[in-house]
Amino acid sequence: ETGVTQTPRHLVMGMTNKKSLKCEQHLGHNAMYWYKQSAKKPLELMFVYSLEERVENNSVPSRFSPECPNSSHLFLHLHTLQPEDSALYLCASCPSDRGGNYGYTFGSGTRLTVV
Amino acid sequence: GDSVTQMEGPVTLSEEAFLTINCTYTATGYPSLFWYVQYPGEGLQLLLKATKADDKGSNKGFEATYRKETTSFHLEKGSVQVSDSAVYFCALGFSGGYNKLIFGAGTRLAVHP
Image 1 (cartoon, one colour):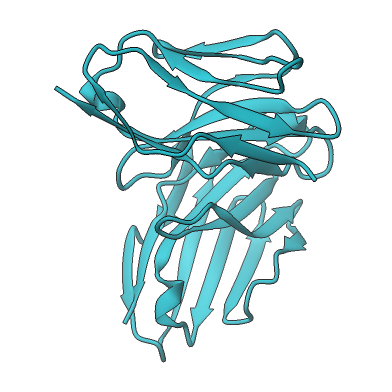
Image 2 (cartoon, one colour):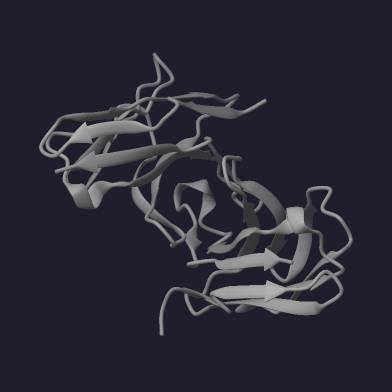
């Protein structure tokens, strides 16, 4: 399978639950990103991994914990979330050695609802 | 800092109408420019891109020309279809580092039969 795959597509969780979002790419890319997309708000860059190292964390609350065990997989571990964390979470990847000319490949996202 | 400004939506058109979605940017260097499209319930898909001044990106009937003199990258289509209804994002990116893209706020397009 090619492209960027995100699972699950939909997730409903309580505020005391712990869950994880998964992102997988088979494009040979070595930079991966988590974005949050809320209604009527711009895309928010959350985390950036390049060559499996976290290179950016945009002041994201600690209830969001990313993990990049290898260049093909990216996780977002969630715990003690708030209702305002309900959003579409998007994963993206790109070949970090090909410069900003390439652009990102996005997954279809995980629609998260916190109840 | 670097930024992207898009026209506010929603843009509502009848089928076969001409589409323009404006995008201007502010950048300290020479970025590449992108248009992404997001259909309902989906992630963003790369629609077209241009990597240097005067380049024209095109795909699926959409076009955009990199205008350095006006720092613009307006998206156009000669005849829209209902299936073009989506949110369109303009973005800029630089080489080096981890290729961070800077996105505009998005413009929603609704096309009616």
